[in-house]
Amino acid sequence: MSSAFIKKYVARREELKSLLCIGIDPEWEKLPHSCLSSDAPLFTFSKAIIDATQGYASAWKPNVAFFERFGSRGFLEFERYILYCKEINQNIPIVADAKRGDLANTAKEYAKYYFETLKVDALTVNAYMGRDSLLPYLDLGGFVFILCLTSNPSSADLQKLVLKKTNSYLYEEVSDFCGKLNAEYPGQVGMVMGGTHPAELAEMRRRHPKMYFLIPGYGAQGGSLEDIYAACGRDSLINSSRGVTLLSRNDDFVSLAKKKAEEIQSQMSQLLSSNV
Amino acid sequence: MSSAFIKKYVARREELKSLLCIGIDPEWEKLPHSCLSSDAPLFTFSKAIIDATQGYASAWKPNVAFFERFGSRGFLEFERYILYCKEINQNIPIVADAKRGDLANTAKEYAKYYFETLKVDALTVNAYMGRDSLLPYLDLGGFVFILCLTSNPSSADLQKLVLKKTNSYLYEEVSDFCGKLNAEYPGQVGMVMGGTHPAELAEMRRRHPKMYFLIPGYGAQGGSLEDIYAACGRDSLINSSRGVTLLSRNDDFVSLAKKKAEEIQSQMSQLLSSNV
Image 1 (cartoon, each protein chain N blue to C red):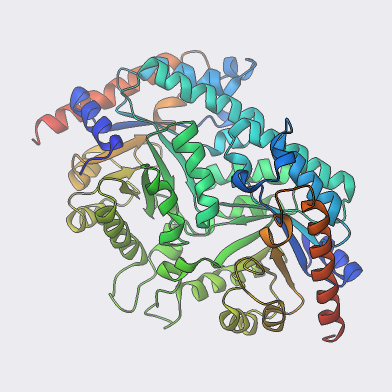
Image 2: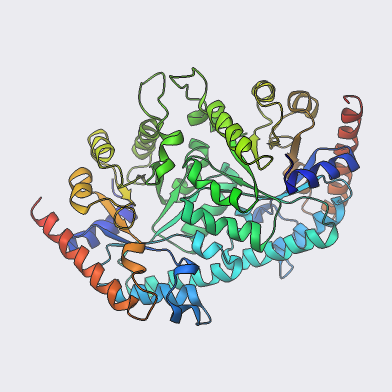
């Protein structure tokens, strides 16, 4: 019942006793000055973060948009960086945060890039187009985290529309859809659940006790670690991006990232140890 | 009330009396043999299609996935091809079909790539994350086609869930959401409505008489031109991809594409002339 992704993640989680997923979002306007002057700024930044925090990361989550902003040049740096992650420690799973969603014959193309060429461990996707738009990832053996309740302020606009048949929110229906897909493709489907909604997160954990949650919204976006962990349990990846990686525009961003990652990992380790 | 995209599209539509949008989806396994042996297969194919059909296209719609499949190399060919489209005829609008959707600070990255760097005329996006995930495109003056009812068989899985408050389908609610956004950002928001659902398309036209529809699903996917046109009216882009561009794997794919595009454009021209 465990996919390659889950096996790798669980091994790493138990090694560090931590759920800390470090998001790598090289936002151009916020990059440290020394990275900007390099000839591969996105890679230089990402590599520095990897080097500084690799002892504390249970997973990496690069967001593709920050690389795609620079098109072919950006993807070149993305590819170097993915290779580097594997070089430094192939036991740390990589979740490519791309939120792709398209027709089956088109989704196949994304599936091939992320799961065959780059060989990342998981991909975030959008389920609005339904089942056939997701099968290409699953048929290749990939793991997908499907967007359910996202962490942004406008998440309610569509995700909290109430459905007639079940009297539940759209995101709850999406989560049931994820659950069914995961039953068919065991251990290949998880959900994105924003950490900015701890009550909803707890309810979703009751509803889906055995599914894996990817939880952005910790740190810069405001969720507290204790609340999120109490709500989501161990089968989760709790992500921090800006809150670890972009603490300074000077060269101390490296030592600050290391310190922050160590601090969170240690806090998580205490939480996990006291809640076995 | 007209955005730069709408002005450009309407001028071209009136010039050709046609709504034909040609989708450029260089699906590797189906590319003509001569393209595969080139050192830039995706560009070579796309350029050949552009050259053959530029007299008949009211818009171009490249799907980014087919380029992203090859990562940095693919994006390099995508960028060459977008430049080439503008070189050959800058009056033909380009709709980048990427179906992106992410948090505001991340969507900004996509917006900058597509609207500032590439300067495409429109982009397809996914609204599941709500209003704040769409504003970065609109704030840059871009035009977005938001996914409403898509053309694939599983479109009903989520898009046809019935909402409690309005007793309408989710995709109808999404369309109202698009309508409101378009009122705020006049002429910058349209919808993707699959041509495989002509009854729903007609109903959506009644509901949104003044919005622009991007309609995939004509041709290979099965919708008939008369039915679609009767349902959607003039303020629409009717897309054909495979049905024009991938008619042979031999070198006659060029002449076949030209012939097919000419045939559709002429058919559209008759339809438009008889329905002024």
